[in-house]
Each structure stands twice: as structure tokens, then as C-alpha cells.
Length: 344
Image (cartoon, rainbow, N blue to C red; front, side):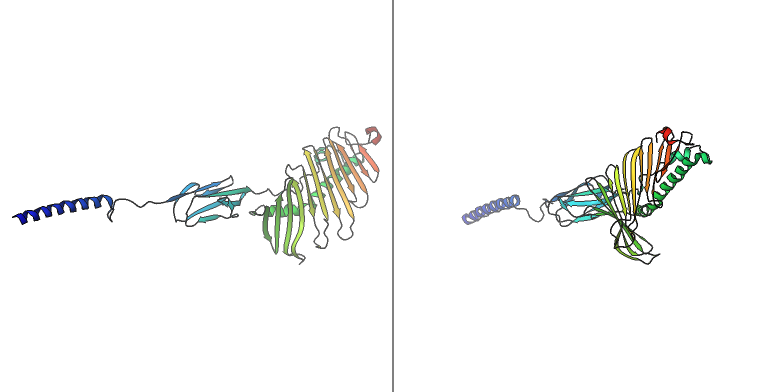
């Protein structure tokens, strides 16, 4: 009986011990059936852009550690992607960027830039409305005025015609999307067997323009290799500019046409045109100045040999035509009159 009691006591003690051990292990050790979840690490990618396009996704993106995230960049019409900065470093004008195996927070910024407007090639024209609106006859007494009318109209048409090549190319380039690289804008397009490339580079004062040809001229079979046919400059406030046209002969480096203008207001502006014969080197000059009511055209060998001056005043309706020093004047009725009486 004593042995039995002792065994009973031992088994009871062992039972209490095992119970205590099992309870302690259950409280301190998580087994495979634990309800605790794995911790997921997340990072943030911040996307921003200026006006002129979109970046998608936009704002703050949450990305799990190790995942990839692609960001798309798109420019609006009239704009291009100027640069994409990832964590402050330039990635160039890319249209998408992928963050691979993300292990930290990141930033991405898209910068868009508006395309420069392709410029006019004849921003200053001769104001011939005075002649168009005049009530003058065709008889001899209106001879001075009619000479001046013919000359002024021809001068304006002459200037527009000479500068028309640039107008055509710029209008064709206007349909193309520009690209920008290292601060230089480029429009490129093909016309028949020729490739035309227009470039623009912005400076502190304005924009410098150039036009180049590559390929074979379909009419002359002349072959061009990056041949500059036109260059120019236009100030930021549009109050000054110049255009130069170059010969098809690549050995001629000086422009054959040089057009310069200044613009102060709607009633005060000027232009000068210089024409150089690329074979003989002979030079002709043509200018127009509008100073309020006073208008003056001057020509030096532009129409044959010699000089010519046309002056008209839109306030008192008088003026004169001077050819090689021979001056004829008209009064406010557009009739021939004494230049002395008018002070001309």
C-alpha cells in the first residue's frame, strides 16, 4: 500500500509538471498555426510634372518592396518632353521609365516645354493702303503720284516674292512635331527627294534660326549635304530680326539676300533688304521706313542702275517721287505740283 501511495504521488507530481511545461511552451512559442501575419515593406514613388503634358500615375504611388513600377510621360499638343528627372538625375526626354526591384522611396519629375512658333519671314511690309485708297485719275496731271503708286506696289511685291521661299518651308514645317536636344529645336520633313531641317536655338536675346537641305534637287539634280540655305534671328519682344538666304553654290558663304527689320510700334517700323549677285558681287539695296505719317522707300540699283526715293505723308496726303535726283511732287489732291511750294 505504501508503494502504491508513493507511485500515486509521483504520477501526480509528474502530471503537474507536464501541465506547467505545456502551458509555458504554448504561451512563449509560436508554432506553424500562429495567427501572426508577415510584415510587408512598402515604399512611395512621388510623380510630378509642369504644364504641357501628363505623367501617369500621377501623385504618390505605393509600391511593395521588390516590385517594379512603370511611369508614363506624354506631352500635350504644341509641347515636347524637355527632360525627365529621376531622383534628381536626368534621364533625357523619355516617354516612360520603370523603377525595378524597388528598395527605397523615389521621385520622378517630367518637364515639358512649349515649341517655339515658326516665324514670319516678312514681318514688315510696305503699307500701300495710302495708294490703294487714293482717288486719283490716270491723266498726266497725276503722273507723279501714279509713278509713286506703281513703284511702291512693285516694291512690296518684290520683297514678298524674294522672301517667299522661307514662307513655304516654314509652313511645311509647321505640320511637323518638333524635337529638342541640347537646347536646339528641330523640325524635319521630306519634300520629294529633299530633306529639309529647320532648327531653333533660344538665347537670352531671342531665337536663332537655321534651315538646311539634304538630298538631290528634283529640278537641277544638284546634290546637297547639310547645306544651309537660310539663317535668321528674332528678338524675344519681336522688335528686331534678320533673315539671310544663301546661294545654292556651297562655295559662296556670304548671303545673297539679307533682310533686316526693326519694329517700335504699329506706326513706327523699318526694313532693309540687300541683294548680292553671287557671280558678279554686285549689290542692290532697298529700304522702307514708316515714322508715323511719314513713309519713305529708298532704292539703290534695285530696279536697274541708279537711285530712287518715294516719300508720302498720310496726314497731309502729299509726297514726291525722286529718280536719280529728278524730283516730282503731288499735292493733297494727288495732282502734280511744285516741290518748292510743298517744301520738298
